[in-house]
Image (cartoon, rainbow, N blue to C red):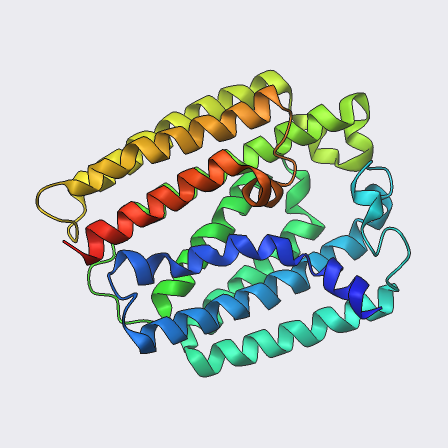
Length: 289
């Protein structure tokens, strides 16, 4: 049962919580041990908090998941993890996460509570409203970035990164919806009612708008943020962002992937190489120049 509980907590999706480290890296505090420790603890808190949300979500979506070709294998939908156990585990994770957040930072506790309530509302109501559902997903990523800001003394963290995070999350969210429609075909509504409010054509238009805006916003950040080198060396990272966005677009439109973004991140080697090269370039510019 412990194995199925851990699987239901979706540890693969903890990669999303890496956004908590944005403030640490982009405010050039990666080598500050206290800030690093506080950020890592905030990362763990969001991992456990997000897992509690996944457990509640799977309990509420149990019938819809059983109509999905992939999600029907989730432990709760497959009947391998009893619902009372899942609910009890979720409550324990919530209490532990919020308590830990409070002792780390009152501001972090507030952000964590907002994240929790927003996601519970999403699981119950908001995920059924077209566009709002994807915007809530994006808001979750912004709150992760804000959580990282709340646990360290930020000196020059650029608000441009909030904009880029929002746009990138919208891009991933619309890609996820596109993949779900592609997989489910005419039976989309049986799995997720909100998909009846989308079409491939409409989603592709949204993806075009958001991807283009993401590139523009990131490019503006690289030469306008106050804490970047005066020689505009950060602009060297733009090609990696371009390729990453194009690669993801290729995967969701040509390969019909994207239903599980974390799986793409964990298995697509070209995308992994791009992220690693982008990260190494950022670290080199921030910490060696």
